[in-house]
Length: 76
Image 1 (tube, rainbow, N blue to C red):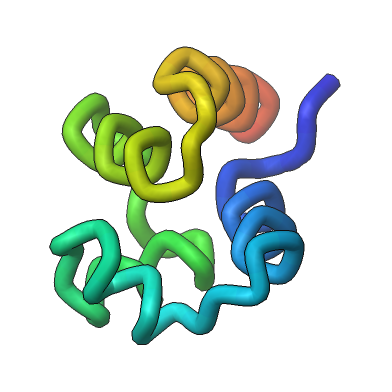
Image 2: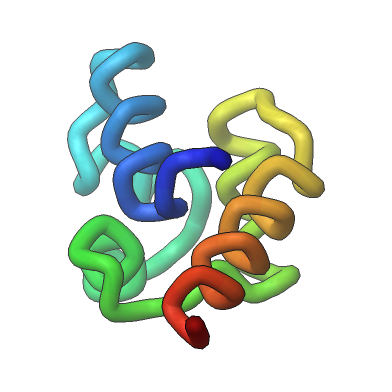
């Protein structure tokens, strides 16, 4: 099982040494949206997955897969 998207996002920001504010500027996502993802309050939609993947040079499906797995676990 993979880690929840919020944890994965936090990890990627640490690995890249990027602050949430810098990520917001880099990705074009509003800071409130970035913060919502980091806090686990906003789901990873397809559009958000594309922003995350492009800005962090990752695969879109990684973000969508982790969000779907997290939703399945929370539904149990």
